[in-house]
Amino acid sequence: MADCIVVNSKFTASVFKDTFKSLSHINPDVLYPSLNVSSFETIIPADIVDLIPKKKKFLFLSINRYERKKNLALALEALHELRGRLDSHEWNEVHLVMAGGYDKRVLENVEHYEELRRLAATLGVNEHVTFLRSFSDEQKVSLFSNCVCVLYTPSNEHFGIVPLEAMYMRCPVIAVNSGGPLESILHSVTGFLCDPQPTQFAEAMEKIVRDPILKDAMGAAGRVRVMEKFSSEAFSEQLYKYICKLTE
Image (cartoon, rainbow, N blue to C red; front, top):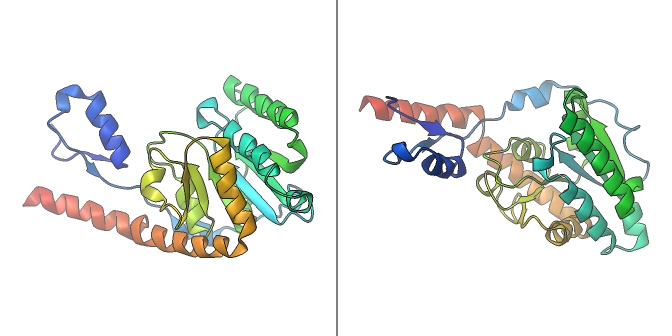
């Protein structure tokens, strides 16, 4: 009975078509979520000195809930793969913060957090990883401000707001080449889109380490992309177009 149906990405539109067979005659419009950029400007960054060991030049950041479907193990495996690509001096300057939504009442959160800690120890990278649970907005802003790159590991995300947050904060994003990130991230411009394989993620991470200018260039391009395509103004303009189309 709806006059207009909107979804948050072209990927979700394809899932809509595959799921609702009786509505196969409907082609949903895409209305990308917007990012409330003003919230980032008003938050006072927190002191995160206690989260990151000293003399870490290359801080990588993973943000996602502690859920198995988020494939957080990929970030740890990529870090281990990166170790083999760097000399000892470079490796000592690398650190990964795994920041995740965590609720001790949710069994999967508790179990998966421990699984990831064990995996880091098994891979021999635990001294280069900080696990952060249920972080604050102030900590998030600080982490974005201090990291050289964000790792986004889920596959087939319907959209994914973290890549937008990262790009707005001038952080390149290395993400899986499926789902929403295919539409939010410009490959080799605002980040890298990779197969969900440790070797591919590590290759992209190595590029960030080897070429410090890349972080600044991609970060600047990311900020521009968010403001042009995913700002509140862009959202309002697109929604207005859909409303006007209904009145024609």
